[in-house]
Image 1 (tube, rainbow, N blue to C red):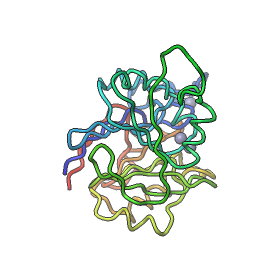
Image 2: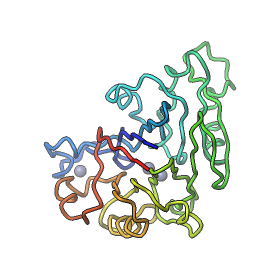
Image 3: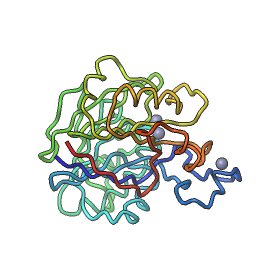
Length: 256
Ligand SMILES: [Zn+2]
Ligand SMILES: [Zn+2]
Ligand SMILES: [Zn+2]
């Protein structure tokens, strides 16, 4: 199968440039150093599946020319992955849009965006989403596409990465549980979060992400969810041959 992936955003929670920052990365003239909050669009088997709706979702959707969506997969509930949910509304004019996440994600949508689920009598302008709760790592049929949840650690939280055929996406990862390694065999393309060089309690450092990438052994790996500590060009040149730095608007195709 062929899985086409567009990086809608590849930055950490602040985005890059960071508001008010004049560091070399935030003032870089290389467009690859400008990073919206992390999100991808997956296109496979005639379906368009979004992973996460960060605060720039509207801008990302316009930039990428997204015209339709079949489903949204949420990795977790942090603001940089969820808070663009309102702008799903243009994709829900005809039918409700199914969105998928774990218990914490579904509860957070209900708590923070209760109006989305019809708890308030707003006159209109709402995204009509239906939440689908799942736990564990049982594969799911989503719009006819088999989606494999991949539980990963994000500090004290267990959140979800996702695998579709030869492609897997693990953002905001600080650890891969023993049971999840087996879900990552024979990948063509792996995307994995890598915040910066220095350690962080809830994200892999670049070194940890590269180590995990080499253990997974995908043909190609792309680092995402980057901070403003590394210039794209400098970091790309420092990595092993099979590991690359993702950037906004990058398109990759996984085959397998
Ligand atoms: Zn994040
Ligand atoms: Zn900066
Ligand atoms: Zn997070």
